[in-house]
Image 1: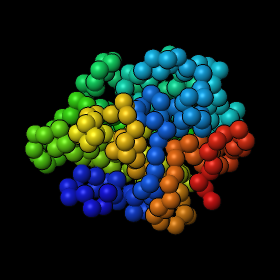
Image 2 (image 1 turned 90 degrees about the vertical axis):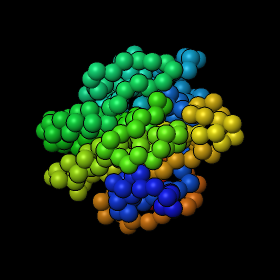
Image 3 (image 1 turned 45 degrees about the horizontal axis):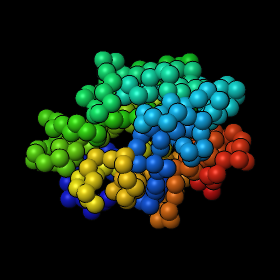
Length: 271
């Protein structure tokens, strides 16, 4: 990651220097609809109640980590940049506030929208509300711009016209707006008491093993992703042991002082 020849994510790199990084981190799937469900359920998607379509809907009977949060009086807020996360798919369960960035439509084949700026501005708006951040809160957002269709962005260097070149421009653009969100957060009174986890739901293929984009197979380029955890007071370090996103839910519950259900297969990374 540090040896990549293009400076595609300077803000993310700066953040990583202050955090615990896991270079051998793996999601539970190679596409969004399955891997993100593990983040908020603490379970493998195959063990959740769901339908069988590609853009999975999750049944209300599933348990999500936001439920004990709400019971404990913790504010829960989510804002997402794809219509897949709209109400009806089940991801909003336990979230008191759940919004989709405005002006986007659903396309089952690709992603047609540029949403980084809108997503960051919506996040700043939500995280400026005292009814959310005036007490303990849990926030989840999903940046989607590094995603087919790959676009060039004038704010970033022109690295060429190949798919990988445009993808790097997408990473650069997303990093710019992620940086602005982090800049806002770091200036808030709650920052020094807030843990931040940055990761990805899957990777992307550019011809490796005959694969393009993602979702259909399980090569490392699709299932090895960054995981960066910043916890106030925790020593910045690199942990090379293999870790899985199945551990995220127990880690989040542990950080928030909530009980970890013994039936969850993952383990807290807090120790």
